[in-house]
Image 1: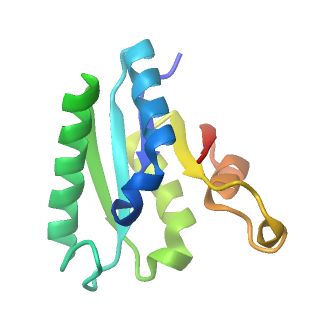
Image 2: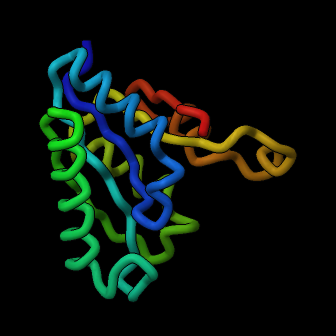
Length: 138
């Protein structure tokens, strides 16, 4: 059914993504398809990496570790946004197209009052993406 799974990853908060990452790996095994882990960074130094090349290297190492841990085929796709906090949704939408993904599996928080004003990233992707989006609650 699915041919390519995309899993957005925030390397600064990987510990909060366990359920979504396990779900992506499980479906990848079930369908025999690869998972591409997508990370969005800026060109400026951050708490995760000093520059985009270091970020891409760390994301690649994360993808390789997930491949070993789950026995699946993985890859990494790092993309740059001027302000990742504000541009994350657009960057992820572009990544869907660039990676040829037909399923996005991403983590999200339990909805709260602020979501009525400012929609979640998962909610926005689910609303506008041309592929299937699975939002996994933390």
